[in-house]
Image 1 (tube, rainbow, N blue to C red):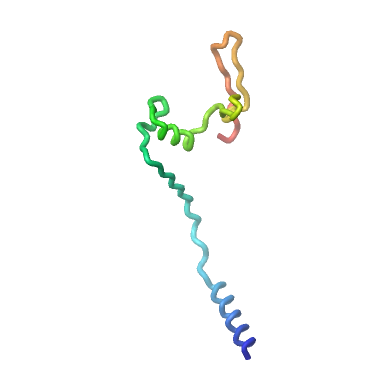
Image 2: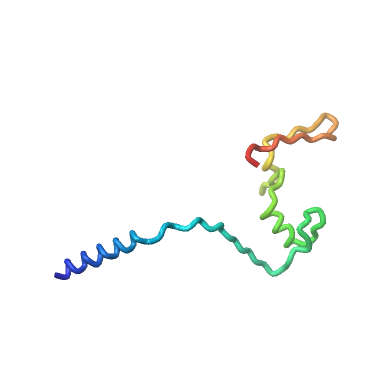
Length: 97
């Protein structure tokens, strides 16, 4: 008798879970990051405070990445060419950016 009741409850649970509404559209993910200070500006050319530079690292990508050993690696570009006189730099930007 107990098994019969258990099977009926299990079947009812499965049927009710199958009747749930269709899924809603996926909501965009929100990431909130907090710290004690506020940036002085969002203009990378005018920033002084470290809080602004933290935001720049999260929002903007750079042409080069600084490695732990002090060397640089191309980030946004596939290649970088320098003219013979060193006055013109030509970057080939990666596809899909």
